[in-house]
Image 1 (cartoon, helix red, strand yellow):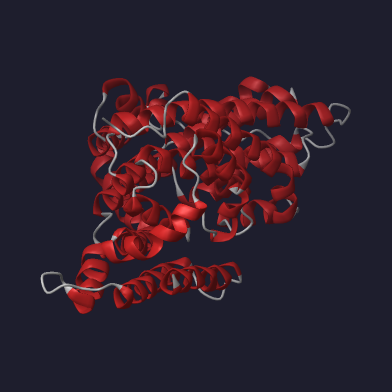
Image 2 (cartoon, helix red, strand yellow):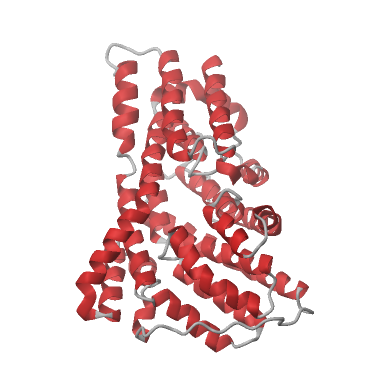
Length: 432
């Protein structure tokens, strides 16, 4: 029991360090993995046939853990290259420009269409660079048409998260971490995407209703759409369409989208554009790859037998396994996904998910259902997200205001998503 409490203390220390921004997740995750491995390894009674503490730390956690998410890393690299193709060749800018021209000055319709187009873009584009580029186009149009800056920024956050749900790299990440088949994760992507889309629609409707008396105080010039052929506009959604509609594996689907983008826009410069997109894509994704190395170490540390033995008594007392208990537990604790907390898969949540996976208290589908749903709290609301910080600065509001405006809606989404997963999809059922 002492070892289990010590592991919880390691979690708390890392949480404080990350929340206070004294230690980035890039470094905190490997340190947490080693700390947990050391505690559980010392407490575990190694037999002569087992690897021992030294090999456990050096091989299982550091060596094997650093490459555990290699497949997810490749998904991320290919997704980043596609992101560069969509941005560099003007595909995203043309989508935004055409939408603004179509919607005219009807601010409600304009905001809804721009939100939808932004979400479509983020099914393939990723990173702060994409947020800045698309946000710099979309936000002035929304605000110039009469929307308040907080509402425009909130719609942008929902659009980024909604597109991210359908991003094949995210789908591949959960497949790799939880070792689930593609078809299973696809079913959750489709359902959660529909529910988050409904939540976005409600946020848009309530926001526009509250601002129905405001007028267009300023007008902005609609950005001119770059000279991009109309058939190239399917590039952002082509990979996810191939994955969901044709059951194509993720990397081939990304490859088709990349090739289609460079050939459809400027076939004579295809080699140059592909080379430039690849180099910039690799540069953009480097911090994420570093994070995945730490996540892999955490997962190996948490799912190992020593940690499982140490943590089982604590988990048995805390984690509910009944349908209503599971739903209420993760619904009520959903805000713990904020600030790199224990339900954030890109923070302390990697360790929690690893412990749950290793202990086998919950089936992998239940872990997917829980972390995929509460992950949207982090994706939309978290004040520590770089996109939230940039959007707050660009719109002259605060990250706390964005958190306050969006959290009630995302929390409602979490409830709907957990209810669907538990009582419709049977997430708590173990595979036969």
